[in-house]
Length: 150
Image (tube, rainbow, N blue to C red; front, side, top):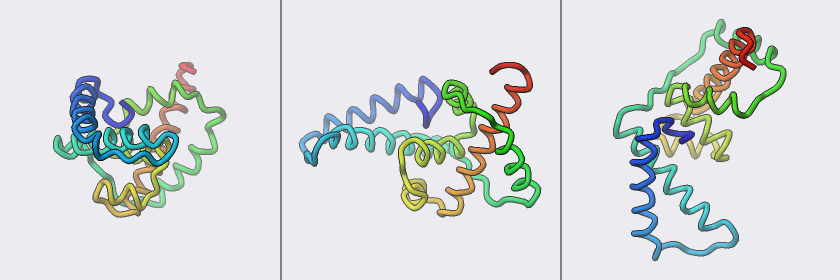
């Protein structure tokens, strides 16, 4: 859900992913605690990304202007506390390119190198998308704060 954000898409990917899990369970190799969990999680993430790519739902913005970098620094300084529920609801509205990179990096623990290989983008694009995702979250949180939603 964190990667796709649409319940119908999530259901489709979930079915595809678990069809692959059950169809390939004979290939699973136990490598300690949580290895099955990691194996299934990897399959689900890969299927979600394949789904987004197939539907052309991932768009990546390239580059930054000095004005944008200045706005980011100012906005980051304004956020006092982070509410997990608020961030999750913001993630649902985030453009797919930002959301996928943010989730893979911040929540799943992938490196920019791994993300770039997985999404077939440059490491700099991955870093840029993460920075823009953070900016998006900060701006939305500040807007919510100004409007009294927090």
